[in-house]
Image 1 (tube, rainbow, N blue to C red):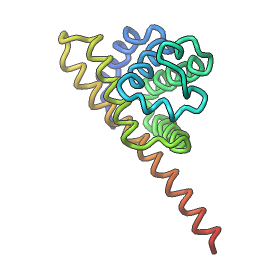
Image 2: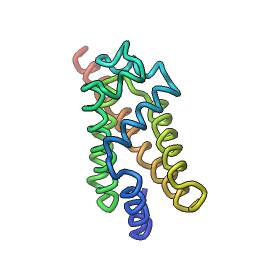
Image 3: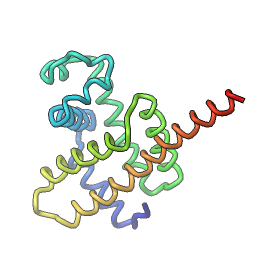
Image 4: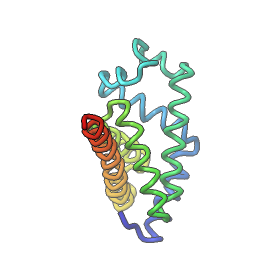
Length: 163
């Protein structure tokens, strides 16, 4: 996922406008994901049984939205540091695989985030939207690779302990 300095600058400028409050954006992202995929809420043990309306006032949900917003911001901050970006995204993949997320879940997250960005940009800048789409595809591919790395590590430990 190699971006030019101009592309990084465009993403960062649009991010500043999109995410004046990253936690609020992340909250909207997760709520929209739950509305479109209600079964996903079961992945969050502390949120099971809550309605969409109850989520916004739930402290566990707010804490998670803050972490998601921080991760999104860190991703944008590291676009010009490929090694750090890969480390950050791989760690996200490893951590989330422990919670049962699969590549399909990250595809859904990507699609919901793109929909939110598309609504914010409108049809005023199709090139910027395409840049976001390709960048988020690259980001999610690194996260998914981290998911698989975690699974491979667990399988390796299981094989070694069986010896």
